[in-house]
Length: 162
Image 1 (cartoon, helix red, strand yellow):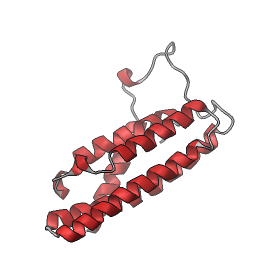
Image 2: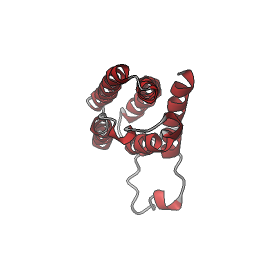
Image 3: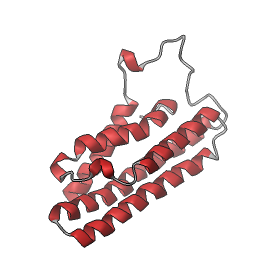
Image 4: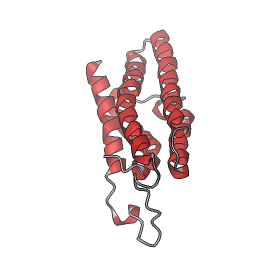
């Protein structure tokens, strides 16, 4: 089970790293279209982005552990435990999304505020875990990484997360 949790946490970290380190020309806006989403855009943007980065680090562990437990029970065929673990994983995602959304209230930059809410809404939208239904531990990385990247991308770009 530790391998599962470590793998999920690593998958979340890889997704955030991929989202944060997009250096391809297609993903980099030109100077003319850039709206400069730097952490100096608003008086408290650096502070809020720092809080987000810290929050995402703890979020990885919380969600990774919950989802890993669910996948483990599911794969083991322990239906009752899997169902309980799925409810806990769903609740963990919603709780973390709500905690992240609470940071939107502290942001003075409207773009940062909106991007925080986008991430929280994306997380809640996939809290039903349908994107991982039937996935085995050995195969979870691709769908999990895809989903987490979609969650993280708006904030990774806005806050220049590393």
